[in-house]
Image (cartoon, rainbow, N blue to C red; front, top):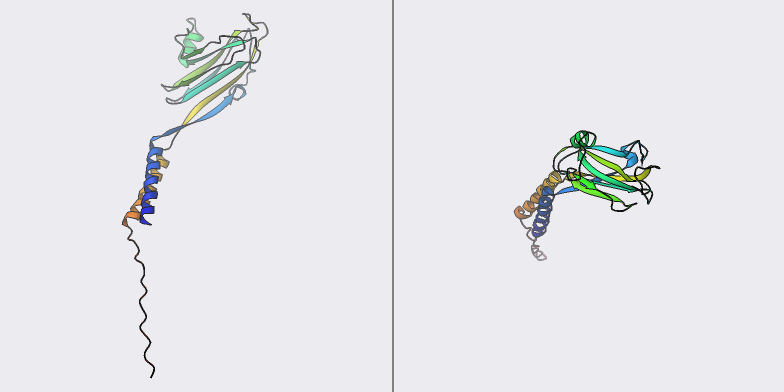
Length: 196
């Protein structure tokens, strides 16, 4: 029985140790309707749509945009908020080499996406910029699209891992310090007294 307690304790200590150093990423998914009230269509007057995010170092952001019509195309970008304000919206513009992510479609109707792990905490902007409408530019009919975004939420298992390891230590210690039970030997009953 002692060996069983020590074995279970050792297994729990190993599991707890692994949990304590591992961070699991869970993802929260949003579609366009979740992040904006705007109609998901890019037009001549509104050539792009954007989403602003506050992200923390270590988080991962995934974005995918698909033009609804096979003859349209959309450019997908990730910029810092400063790049968006001074470059994209400013007079200098943003080049492909300056953008954090710049995913340009190579064909009409193509779905484009990126996945980026954030290194520096801060505000970021995902931009969906109309590229072609029905194969022509400037656009005439607008570009309807679908958009999904997933942002990771790192989940630390350090505290639960430590708790599991402590329980394992307690079980193993109990197995080590407990004394084995000696079998109870049945003493022979004395013979009955002789009849008188």
